[in-house]
Amino acid sequence: MRLFAFIAALIIALVTSCSAIGQKADLPKGATLLTDSATAMRAVTSTHFAVEVEGNSPGVQLRSAEGQLTRAGSAKGVAKVDEGAQLLELQFVIIGQDLYLKPPTGPVQKLPLSFAGTVYDPSVILNPDRGIAAALASGTGPTTEAREQVDGVDTYRLQVKFPAQPLGSLVPQLAQDKTSEIWVATQGSRLIKAQFPTTYGSATAHFSDFDVPVDITPPS
Figure 1: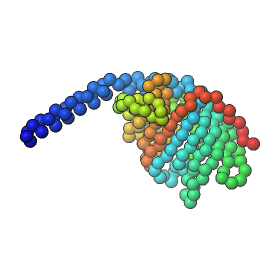
Figure 2 (figure 1 turned 60 degrees about the vertical axis):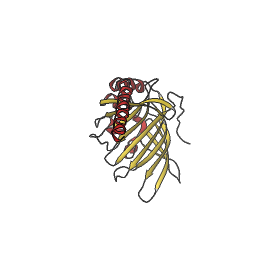
Figure 3 (figure 1 turned 90 degrees about the vertical axis):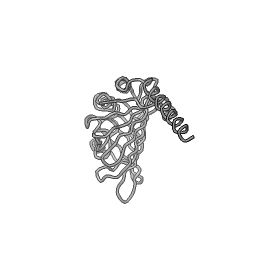
Figure 4 (figure 1 turned 135 degrees about the vertical axis):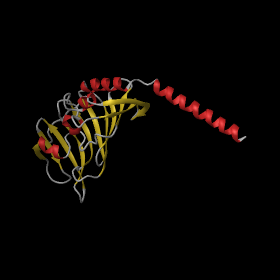
């Protein structure tokens, strides 16, 4: 009976393993999906984004950011920034080279856009040459791992490695020696989710509402 049970377990394991290998073999090639996603994201004119940062680093103040942005570089939303003793929620608007910040108390502050770079600058995300499309095009060794539902969208999950540039400007302290995971829509190839390893933890980004008209104006 023990021998029979052992043989049965071995057969089940072999069948399950072969089934998993077969399913993975049926998935599209990672290189094709990555190239298609880079092309699709390069054509995006606007999107809703959400970024979450996990882990602690003295050099990274951003904890989360969410809002809307355009390929032209305009953006508006809310960011949570770690100031050590407290977590501040800041409303922001970016238009051209101007950054408008609304702290929890007090009036709106108008600052040069370069100030956003000290915390996080979302205005470059949809830039075709320096944003997420360029980052996707720079990825190496992509492999397709599974087909999954993410944020209500049917996607392919890929594992891929990214160099410091251009992704380093989007993900502070990117860990280059580790593998990132991205989720690409099965229809349209747009990037739905990405999780990047960092030297202090991880950064996760979600994208939705592509090409929806966005009206971004200076706060009054």
